[in-house]
Image 1 (tube, rainbow, N blue to C red):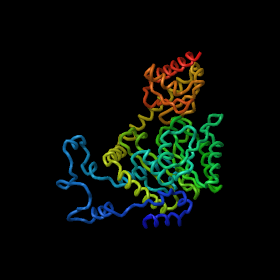
Image 2: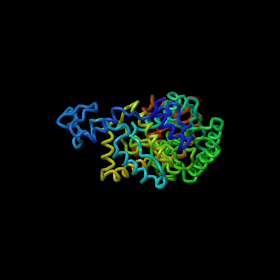
Image 3: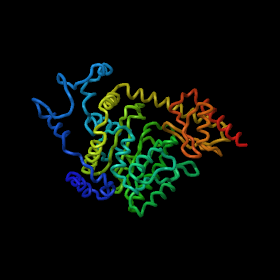
Image 4: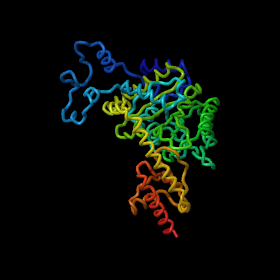
Length: 433
C-alpha cells in the first residue's frame, strides 16, 4: 500500500474508525497521486516565463484547436473547452452546485458536508461509491423495485449482493417494517450499503414527510444497534416532486445523524436539467469531520484520475453557464410544470374504471416514470405484444410490473398510449381463453 494511502487511512481511522471499516479493500488503497497534475498546478501559479508541464498543445497563448470545431462553439472560449478539467471538476462549477444544494435542501444549512466532486454523470457517481465502499459479499439494501443497473454497478463489478425489501406496504405507503427487517438482517455482518432512490425509478414514488421520518428513524436505530451504514442517496430525478411528498433529499437529515452513518449524495444535471448526453453529475460526502471529508475527496480524486482522468471540460462549461444564466430558474419552472401536467394527466386517464380489469398502478408522485401492476398478464409478454402489434415501447421490470415513461409522451397523447396498452392486454387475455 502506498504511503499516501496509509496516511489517508490513518486520518480516517483516527477521526472515525467506523468509516474506515466501511471502506472497501480498493477504497483503502486509493489515494491522490502527487504527480504531473500537482506539478502542473504549481507551475500554472508560479511559472511566469514558460510552463512546459501539461500534455496539451498551445498556439499563440491559447489551447491549440481546429477552427472548424471552434466554429461550432460561438461564445465559448477555447480555454473553457479544450484543456483537461481538474479531476475533481471545475472549481467554480463545484462551488455553484454546492450553493444549489443549500438552496434546494434547507436541512443542509447547519450540516458539514464536502464540496461536490464532478462525476461523469450519475452512473459514474454510483460506481465511485461502489468502488470505495463495496467489497465482495457486502450487502446492498434496495427496494424490490429498483433500477436494473444497480446489479452491474454493485454486484457484477464489485461482487456485493443486492438484497431487497418491499417498497410498499398494504396501504401503498413506504414499507418501513420491511426496510427495517432487511437492515437488521445485516447485524452479523456489521455493515450495510443502503441505496435510497427518490423519486424512485421505476415507480416514480417519493415518500411523504411522515414516511421520511420513519426512514431516518430506522437508519438511526440500525446504527445504534451496531450496524455501520453507507447511505447512498441516488437523487437522479431530484426536484421533480409533483404532489404529496418531501421536497428535498434525505441527505440533509442523514448528515451528522450518527457516527456509524456515512451519507453520500449522488446527483447531477443530467435528468434535473434535461442534459442527459452531457454527462455531468456530482458526488458529495457528509461528515462532522472536515478531515474525513478531505480524505474521502483525495481518495475519490485518485479513483477518477485512475479511471476517466477527468470529466468533459466542455460539458462542465455548458452546465456552469446554464446555472449562471438569468433564464435558468424560469426555464426550469416551465419544464417542471410541463412534466407535472403529464403526471397528472396519467393519473386522470388511469382512474378510468375500465383499466381495473387488467391492472392497478403503484403510487407515483414524482420523477419520469410510473409502474403498472398487471393482473394475470406477464409483463414481458405484454411488452413484446405491444411492440410487435402496436409499435408501443414499454419496460418490463419483472413478471408483474410494466414501467411507462410519461416523461417522453406528449400530454395530449397519454390517453392514446394507455388505450393501446389496454388493447394489448385485452388481446392477450382473450387469446388465453
